[in-house]
Image 1 (tube, one colour):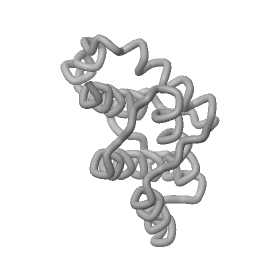
Image 2 (tube, rainbow, N blue to C red; image 1 turned 30 degrees about the horizontal axis):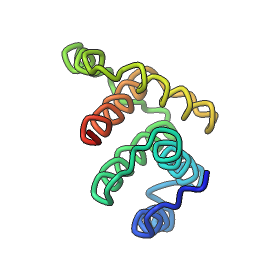
Image 3 (cartoon, rainbow, N blue to C red; image 1 turned 135 degrees about the vertical axis):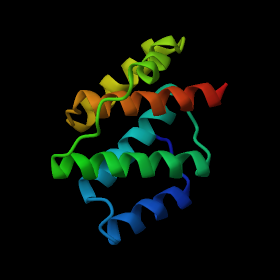
Image 4 (cartoon, rainbow, N blue to C red; image 1 turned 90 degrees about the horizontal axis):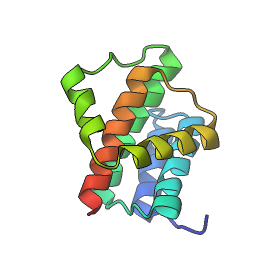
Length: 125
């Protein structure tokens, strides 16, 4: 993918990896997702959006590494994801991300990631 990420985003990931808030594998996975979002789906994140998303993803990978996935979200919140008109594209983004990285997410983490992806799509328009 020819997309080049904002230097501030790269520096944030480097800093988080240096201070062991993120593993090198987690860093690669986040970069893969950001590149996928831009290159395949045209989702161009502002630095602020990317930082929030990175913070969420680093927490996700930290919980996965520790074997402590997030709790399932409330049905009402999960329903908001389903109500989003682009839920099919969110599902495809998630499948693409899993295929590219080889990461298998517990259902709870999948729900939260899809919620964030839905939010990014809503803000894109």
